Amino acid sequence: MCNAKINIMTASTLSQISTYSLENQNDWQFEMQRAITDIDELRHQLSLPNLDAMQISGFPLLVPRPYLNRIQKGNSRDPLLLQVLPLGVENVAAPGYQLQPLQEDRFNPVPGLIHKYHSRVLLTVTGACAINCRYCFRRHFDYQANQVSQAQWQRAIDYIANEPSITEVIFSGGDPLMAPDKVLARLVKRLETIQHLRYLRIHTRLPIVIPSRVNSAMLDWLQATRFKVSVVLHCNHPQEIDEHVVLGIKRLHDAKVTLLNQSVLLKQVNDSSQTLADLSYALYDAGVLPYYLHLLDKVQGAFHFAVSDAEAIKLHSELLATLPGYLVPKLVREIPGQPSKTPIFNIG
Ligand SMILES: *Cc1c(COP(=O)(O)O)cnc(C)c1O
Ligand code: SF4
Image 1 (cartoon, rainbow, N blue to C red):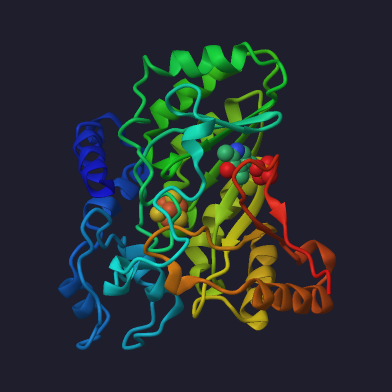
Image 2: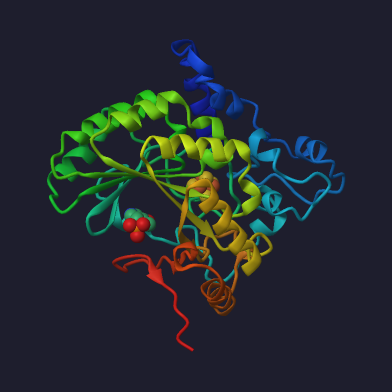
């Protein structure tokens, strides 16, 4: 499903290449086109002859090379590799792990819009992502039904215009920055006509996966908007932050964007207090504050990433005991029907 959309994206982005000329604006789109989708190629690139992996239908391997470059060669347990490597275990059903763990269709009043919490709505700007994270809770989401064209955004805009309690729009996906800047700039302009909207938030992993996505076309619309803008990055491990990522973040920072990060707590990837503390410092050094540490959503195919509640609370307590408060992310999980993400506390 995701693969089909990425193909569509690639075809449509090809036609746009001629429209930009400055500064390799399309660098990130070329990176998408030459992303690794073949396991033998991955095996070869990482010098891992005995890579235990398989193609998973519906949610295939997808790793752009700028991310691949941060995976340690010869290390089959590399924490970045484990996030992208499709394993046979994903096909095994586990009790309690569902196709739609968040039941978002219940909060989907018009296509492309999820209104679950007071004062903010989420727009699924595109179903495409730059990378296929194996633990992703959206891996089975019906993006086809929520694939919204320019014209269809009118229903979402009307919905927001009729709900004065909504002050913030969140661009999500997929990864919203997979949409071309022209599309994003136009959508922002249309949203700006709604007087009660004040805040724009972008939830994205692209500045981590392909740092060149933070290009001047993007900075142009970010700086032109009247909205107060925040970007919530999705970085799970300090090794994901290289000098290119730092440069992209600096550009966002210079554009007066508030920078936050959310991570997912993942077994064998970042389930150690040392790794999480290192991540907090690496983010802060780059100009980003930790926001959320999510417990894994129980999505089918991801149970091998699960960390128990007891272990998560222990790790979080260790962070509280060692880091300044502003570097400790809130430990949360998403429970359908709750008015917010649900904080997980040590009540022992
Ligand atoms: C997480 C989420 C939000 C944002 O919640 P915050 O607590 O403000 O970060 C909004 N809408 C949906 C559907 C979400 O899943
Ligand atoms: S980038 Fe985000 S939405 Fe896309 S696959 Fe990864 S976790 Fe899921």
